[in-house]
Length: 258
Image 1 (cartoon, rainbow, N blue to C red):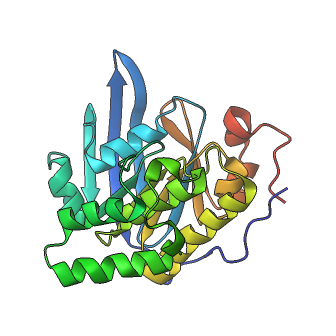
Image 2 (tube, one colour; image 1 turned 60 degrees about the horizontal axis):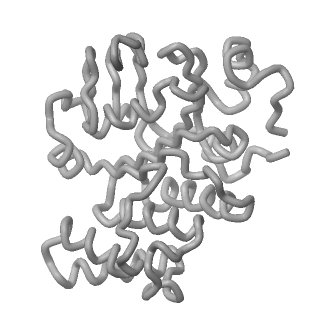
């Protein structure tokens, strides 16, 4: 069974709220997905979201980015109410990066051309674009893959590409939707190290949701468990798996991480 990684940051010099969801409720066809949910995400933490299918994890990402509007409540980033700020302005103004579970790249473009496409959207200066792409290529060890069409990359390579594309605009906040899904053990460990390096070296706040509970808990500072549209547990990985409500609704009695 997986161990909680020693490189996980366990405390912060200062706790500063960078994203706040205030009394968020969300309905789909009269079905309530989120119920008066309150969530604070601290600057430069890695936060993990867990919960059964349909509990609202991806919906929370969509509400933060502006892909969807909540039925009630507010979204605050850096203390600014951005509930009514459109998605593109929100992404650029507050430096939001989002990695969807599926897709996120152009299948018939090469890895390099996918990077160039995003860079041309976000970076005006040609030399700055070039240096940013070179940094990404080096950081993710993309050199042997530059001319390969994205559709021919492996699952792990595709996931690295989408994460790197999200980093072109130097995000302050990075949202990762099911990054470990359908990947082998070595690729998952590689992505865990990328996540922690982005936190420690790039000072990025990262939010991860995934069904691979052990893999997620191995690389986050704090985790929340959602059930019936609410947060039923919040704390360190060890704290949430010991929480009786979380065990009853999600983990089960036999779940362990060490």
